[in-house]
Length: 580
Image 1 (cartoon, rainbow, N blue to C red):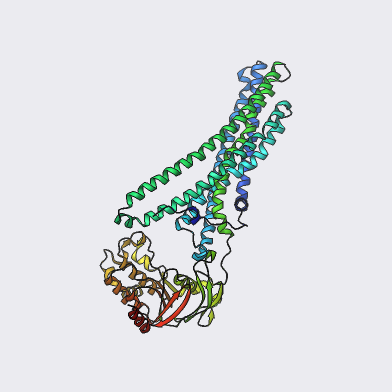
Image 2: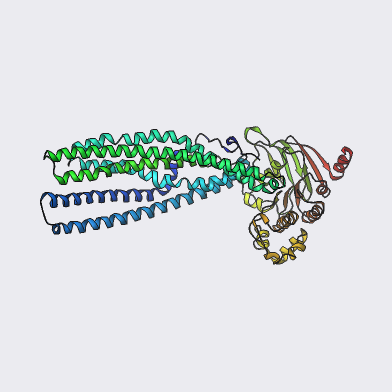
């Protein structure tokens, strides 16, 4: 088990999925919150100006005019009120920033989740599960600093320095010119250093995605690794990859600290030059202490929005790196041809494929010009080597993929004209590894029929030969299962999956390797249950197991994406015996 390469998990971005453009489009959803955040920050800037004015006036009156301290008590009280107002505005700023972050994450994550569901597995072929989870969880979280730090600071850096400069110039225009000409160096070096670290941010995100995929593979394959004594070797690999990730993270942080140093350097030098000019002007007696102190107090505040923008520029790169993984999903076109409104047949349907073609990306895999029929009420098995197109055909039948060419008919109705939700309500899919969530046995049986009665549940369990072991569980149907059905054997889970399919009253069932991984006894029990559950339904079974094929009516052999031959059950058994 090796670490997957970046090419295996990287999705090429469509031309119209510009990450920054998409981020600005999403920002429109919280524009009023952003406007409130920026307005509050501007208000804080005005309070800073007022505080600097009052403080410089107080120093002028005490130091230069020799007034008593008691004479500036009203100024001191006003300063305290301004400080209190500034604290309140800062509190509002934090609250609104947190609200904006929560709203944007909820919005993006919800839309992304729905889009992934709408795209379906065929459109997402090649995307690793761990990479998708990483994108929906941490990827969306990485967007937060962009909206709550970078965008507000971008507007503040354009507003506050200009506002402060207008206020400073009448008091001391020479210092104002120093501020004016030194200010561009901060965003200039911010961009130069930021571009150098942008590539590192992107590589770090890709590295994290690869780690997520690798770790999920390890967790899922841990029993096999233990059996073959390879767990310690993989533990060493995980430690090595973790160390590489830590070193790469420190490289990004080094550039971040370098950027912060450059920003602080120019702000400090600019403030120092302003202080020298003010000092000489005070010595020459052409500037009052009040005006000089006011300008000196405002100089750091002038640079502060630019410095904050420089520091938040890393939040921009972090958000863009995440958006490069998220935006392409929104730019992908939804599959067409399965959005009708016709009701599906109520009874077991007949299904006919006519010239159906579907290919995955780069023309790999899929099916080609398939002509194939599932007679109503029959059990048909699909056989063939791995990659022959069996699962693709099943996905086309269930609507998880749309044909690129050809049509699928259900009782002479074009599948593209049938309402998708109504069609899926008539389907039951039992995968090779049925999914069971943490919860009771009952909760795992009724997701397709939440209104099922106890009599119906018992009938489903009996048909699937699951009533015996369920009755022996500590709490029967209320026995709690662990994640992925932990607590039951593979054969028991397969029978529960069949009971679940039976309970939903589907007229068309698709079973993908229903007896894979079972011993001979469990396989026989499941096959007997399969025979009962299939009664009165049209069933498509993907299987290689001879025991399973002994209970079917017809066998279709797939070769290189085509249905090569169709046998009756007797003909297929004769062919197998002859080849043996």
